[in-house]
Length: 203
Image (cartoon, rainbow, N blue to C red; front, side):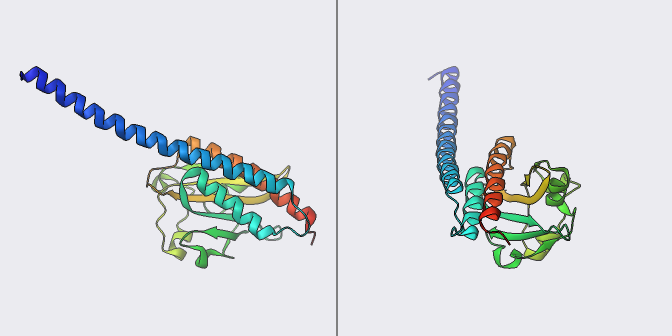
Protein backbone atom coordinates (compact mmCIF):
# COMPACT_ATOMS: atom_id res chain seq x y z
CA UNK A 1 0.00 0.00 0.00
CA UNK A 2 1.48 3.35 -1.02
CA UNK A 3 1.76 6.20 1.43
CA UNK A 4 -0.91 8.24 -0.41
CA UNK A 5 -3.38 5.35 -0.32
CA UNK A 6 -2.67 4.81 3.35
CA UNK A 7 -3.32 8.48 4.13
CA UNK A 8 -6.56 8.31 2.15
CA UNK A 9 -7.67 5.23 4.07
CA UNK A 10 -6.89 6.89 7.38
CA UNK A 11 -8.82 10.00 6.34
CA UNK A 12 -11.83 7.92 5.31
CA UNK A 13 -11.74 6.04 8.61
CA UNK A 14 -11.70 9.30 10.55
CA UNK A 15 -14.56 10.68 8.48
CA UNK A 16 -16.55 7.49 9.03
CA UNK A 17 -16.11 7.83 12.79
CA UNK A 18 -17.04 11.53 12.68
CA UNK A 19 -20.18 10.89 10.61
CA UNK A 20 -21.29 8.09 12.90
CA UNK A 21 -20.91 10.37 15.92
CA UNK A 22 -22.74 13.17 14.11
CA UNK A 23 -25.53 10.80 13.13
CA UNK A 24 -25.91 9.64 16.74
CA UNK A 25 -26.04 13.24 17.91
CA UNK A 26 -28.73 14.10 15.34
CA UNK A 27 -30.79 11.08 16.36
CA UNK A 28 -30.58 12.14 20.01
CA UNK A 29 -31.62 15.69 19.10
CA UNK A 30 -34.56 14.43 17.03
CA UNK A 31 -35.71 12.17 19.88
CA UNK A 32 -35.50 15.04 22.34
CA UNK A 33 -37.44 17.37 20.05
CA UNK A 34 -40.14 14.75 19.51
CA UNK A 35 -40.50 14.33 23.26
CA UNK A 36 -40.60 18.12 23.65
CA UNK A 37 -43.43 18.41 21.13
CA UNK A 38 -45.36 15.68 22.95
CA UNK A 39 -44.83 17.41 26.30
CA UNK A 40 -45.92 20.79 24.92
CA UNK A 41 -48.96 19.25 23.24
CA UNK A 42 -49.95 17.60 26.52
CA UNK A 43 -49.47 20.92 28.31
CA UNK A 44 -51.69 22.68 25.80
CA UNK A 45 -54.44 20.09 26.34
CA UNK A 46 -54.22 20.54 30.11
CA UNK A 47 -54.39 24.28 29.65
CA UNK A 48 -57.59 23.91 27.61
CA UNK A 49 -59.13 21.80 30.37
CA UNK A 50 -58.35 23.79 33.51
CA UNK A 51 -61.25 23.58 35.95
CA UNK A 52 -61.77 24.81 39.51
CA UNK A 53 -60.91 21.32 40.72
CA UNK A 54 -57.68 21.16 38.70
CA UNK A 55 -54.45 20.63 40.63
CA UNK A 56 -52.59 23.89 40.00
CA UNK A 57 -49.37 22.68 41.62
CA UNK A 58 -49.36 19.61 39.40
CA UNK A 59 -49.85 21.87 36.39
CA UNK A 60 -46.89 24.02 37.43
CA UNK A 61 -44.76 20.88 37.79
CA UNK A 62 -45.82 19.74 34.31
CA UNK A 63 -44.88 23.14 32.90
CA UNK A 64 -41.41 22.98 34.40
CA UNK A 65 -40.89 19.37 33.30
CA UNK A 66 -41.81 20.37 29.75
CA UNK A 67 -39.27 23.20 29.91
CA UNK A 68 -36.48 20.90 31.10
CA UNK A 69 -37.27 18.26 28.50
CA UNK A 70 -37.24 20.87 25.75
CA UNK A 71 -33.73 22.09 26.56
CA UNK A 72 -32.11 18.85 27.79
CA UNK A 73 -31.67 19.91 31.41
CA UNK A 74 -32.37 18.33 34.79
CA UNK A 75 -32.40 21.45 36.95
CA UNK A 76 -34.92 24.23 36.70
CA UNK A 77 -37.21 26.52 38.65
CA UNK A 78 -40.47 28.35 38.23
CA UNK A 79 -40.55 31.61 40.16
CA UNK A 80 -43.60 33.78 40.75
CA UNK A 81 -43.48 37.46 41.58
CA UNK A 82 -44.76 38.64 44.95
CA UNK A 83 -46.84 41.62 43.87
CA UNK A 84 -46.39 43.37 47.22
CA UNK A 85 -42.61 43.13 47.57
CA UNK A 86 -41.53 42.51 43.98
CA UNK A 87 -39.50 39.51 45.17
CA UNK A 88 -39.33 36.36 43.08
CA UNK A 89 -40.44 33.25 44.97
CA UNK A 90 -39.36 29.73 44.00
CA UNK A 91 -42.73 27.94 43.84
CA UNK A 92 -41.53 24.85 41.96
CA UNK A 93 -38.03 23.42 41.68
CA UNK A 94 -36.89 20.29 39.88
CA UNK A 95 -33.43 18.92 40.48
CA UNK A 96 -30.88 18.57 43.25
CA UNK A 97 -31.63 21.96 44.82
CA UNK A 98 -35.38 21.40 45.35
CA UNK A 99 -35.39 21.11 49.15
CA UNK A 100 -33.16 24.15 49.62
CA UNK A 101 -34.90 26.42 47.11
CA UNK A 102 -38.62 25.78 47.58
CA UNK A 103 -40.06 29.03 48.96
CA UNK A 104 -36.72 30.84 48.70
CA UNK A 105 -37.03 34.52 47.75
CA UNK A 106 -34.87 36.61 45.48
CA UNK A 107 -34.89 40.34 46.06
CA UNK A 108 -36.32 42.46 43.28
CA UNK A 109 -33.91 42.90 40.37
CA UNK A 110 -31.33 40.40 41.67
CA UNK A 111 -29.58 38.07 39.26
CA UNK A 112 -30.45 36.96 35.76
CA UNK A 113 -34.01 36.17 36.81
CA UNK A 114 -34.45 39.65 38.25
CA UNK A 115 -33.09 41.16 35.04
CA UNK A 116 -35.36 39.03 32.83
CA UNK A 117 -38.47 39.99 34.79
CA UNK A 118 -37.56 43.67 35.00
CA UNK A 119 -36.81 43.96 31.26
CA UNK A 120 -39.38 41.36 30.16
CA UNK A 121 -36.76 39.74 27.95
CA UNK A 122 -35.35 36.23 27.77
CA UNK A 123 -31.72 35.94 28.83
CA UNK A 124 -29.39 33.27 27.48
CA UNK A 125 -26.14 32.93 29.40
CA UNK A 126 -23.64 30.55 27.81
CA UNK A 127 -21.01 31.15 30.49
CA UNK A 128 -22.03 32.71 33.82
CA UNK A 129 -18.43 33.78 34.49
CA UNK A 130 -18.80 36.36 31.72
CA UNK A 131 -22.29 37.54 32.67
CA UNK A 132 -22.46 40.72 34.77
CA UNK A 133 -26.11 40.18 35.78
CA UNK A 134 -25.42 36.71 37.21
CA UNK A 135 -25.63 36.52 40.99
CA UNK A 136 -23.93 33.63 42.82
CA UNK A 137 -26.47 33.86 45.67
CA UNK A 138 -28.47 30.77 44.70
CA UNK A 139 -25.33 28.72 44.07
CA UNK A 140 -24.09 29.71 47.52
CA UNK A 141 -27.39 28.62 49.09
CA UNK A 142 -27.58 25.30 47.24
CA UNK A 143 -23.94 24.36 46.71
CA UNK A 144 -24.58 23.96 42.99
CA UNK A 145 -22.21 25.25 40.32
CA UNK A 146 -24.04 27.00 37.52
CA UNK A 147 -22.15 27.14 34.23
CA UNK A 148 -24.88 28.02 31.73
CA UNK A 149 -28.51 29.09 32.09
CA UNK A 150 -31.58 30.48 30.38
CA UNK A 151 -34.22 32.60 32.07
CA UNK A 152 -37.47 33.64 30.40
CA UNK A 153 -40.03 36.01 31.91
CA UNK A 154 -43.68 35.16 32.48
CA UNK A 155 -46.22 37.93 32.03
CA UNK A 156 -49.84 38.68 31.24
CA UNK A 157 -50.11 41.82 29.11
CA UNK A 158 -48.68 44.55 31.40
CA UNK A 159 -48.47 42.40 34.53
CA UNK A 160 -45.32 40.50 35.45
CA UNK A 161 -45.98 36.98 36.71
CA UNK A 162 -42.47 35.61 37.28
CA UNK A 163 -39.95 33.57 35.35
CA UNK A 164 -38.76 30.12 34.35
CA UNK A 165 -35.07 29.42 34.74
CA UNK A 166 -33.16 26.33 33.60
CA UNK A 167 -29.61 25.60 34.68
CA UNK A 168 -26.91 23.45 33.02
CA UNK A 169 -27.60 20.88 30.29
CA UNK A 170 -27.31 17.18 31.01
CA UNK A 171 -24.35 16.89 28.63
CA UNK A 172 -22.53 19.96 29.92
CA UNK A 173 -22.81 21.85 26.63
CA UNK A 174 -23.80 25.54 26.88
CA UNK A 175 -27.39 26.45 26.13
CA UNK A 176 -27.97 28.00 22.69
CA UNK A 177 -30.50 30.15 20.82
CA UNK A 178 -32.56 27.11 19.82
CA UNK A 179 -32.93 26.21 23.49
CA UNK A 180 -34.00 29.76 24.25
CA UNK A 181 -36.64 29.69 21.50
CA UNK A 182 -38.08 26.43 22.87
CA UNK A 183 -38.17 27.86 26.37
CA UNK A 184 -39.95 30.99 25.15
CA UNK A 185 -42.70 28.75 23.78
CA UNK A 186 -42.99 26.94 27.11
CA UNK A 187 -43.06 30.29 28.92
CA UNK A 188 -45.95 31.49 26.79
CA UNK A 189 -47.96 28.39 27.63
CA UNK A 190 -46.94 28.72 31.27
CA UNK A 191 -48.17 32.32 31.43
CA UNK A 192 -51.52 31.32 29.95
CA UNK A 193 -51.78 28.40 32.38
CA UNK A 194 -51.03 30.57 35.42
CA UNK A 195 -53.61 33.18 34.41
CA UNK A 196 -56.21 30.49 33.71
CA UNK A 197 -55.48 28.88 37.08
CA UNK A 198 -55.89 32.26 38.81
CA UNK A 199 -59.31 32.69 37.22
CA UNK A 200 -60.49 29.25 38.29
CA UNK A 201 -58.92 29.54 41.77
CA UNK A 202 -59.65 33.14 42.82
CA UNK A 203 -58.15 34.21 46.15
